[in-house]
Length: 441
Ligand SMILES: *Cc1c(COP(=O)(O)O)cnc(C)c1O
Image 1 (tube, protein in one colour):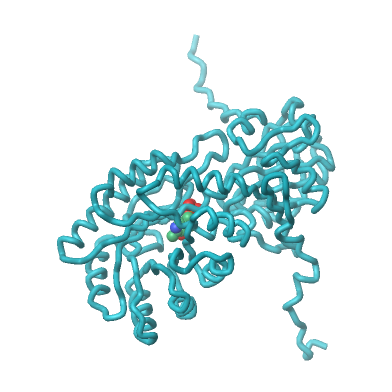
Image 2 (cartoon, helix red, strand yellow):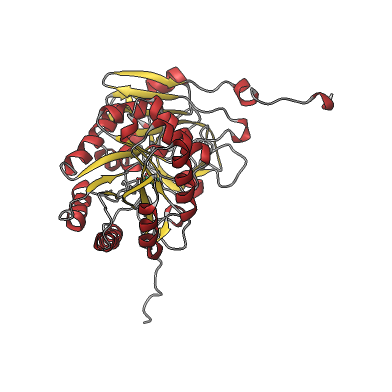
């Protein structure tokens, strides 16, 4: 007898609804009211605001921030990366919990200030800042600007001289480390556009120290996003520590290290990054260095705190395709990063029925507008509602109005209460700033 041909391993089974909820303590299935976020029935929000609609849990935001701060106590301060979710209410919750902000544009700077975050708690990162954005940062008197190139250093120096004000800067160094994450969210490889090449950083630091209106205070790193193992952090931290020693040996002052964000979460059934393990890596690399440490997590703080609710518009191909009323215009991550998002029916009955593979797609005229392929789910019928989980980070912030789809509303849950914190955009808003010139009449 011949040995059987090598079988192709079947794809790993999708986690059951029960397993998904067990790993997410903020979510539960109520026997009558269905899926709940922090004890509030998501059906109530969908009834009131329609679908698609976002729901965020303030308690989850607070709990995650406190867990991270607990692990980093006495070690590092948390500057929330605003770009993951820049809603004013989200910023307010995190700021009230003691987080500062990491912003990457003048718009995010304005949002952080508007949400009441003190300028002294704001750090400005970003690979291409305009003179207007740098002026705004200097006018606000923020804590630090993370400089990403020699050209930007000269720009900031000139603007600081104009204002006659000393500006604290950190140099964002590209450590040339592979974060082992999706190529579109890897930022710490030499080939990426981010940061100052490692080998040029020391000379640039010395040049900055010699400029009259700049005070280099340290280094910044950010190697990528959705990182779930420690090895890339350890490698990047080791390179940063070496650079700090070299700079100090050259007589330069290094008092701050901004260690970036990137902490990953469990989207499926993989474990997310552990704050304690991350803290251990920070302590091992920098614990004896006498530097002020900060970290800039975005996704880890807000990702699990948000869900996107959608309704099934119709099914086709004998139920093998379900068309939702949510689309890539709301949640682009599956289309852009091949991201896997858990999908859970809101109905307690549906959630327990036998599963079969179904493609979940949106109505936008793009094949990429697909949330999940061959997902093992209970049979879905028109009108059924589902929640796309872990959508609080890089969800609503990446929305577009493509196909003239108005922005979806947002609800914020806090305790037993919830509030609409953004209404559904009115259709007329889509063209409110457009005009048709007279010469077309
Ligand atoms: C995007 C970004 C972050 C946050 O990344 P997460 O993966 O969401 O933690 C932190 N720092 C900088 C400079 C960034 O660009």
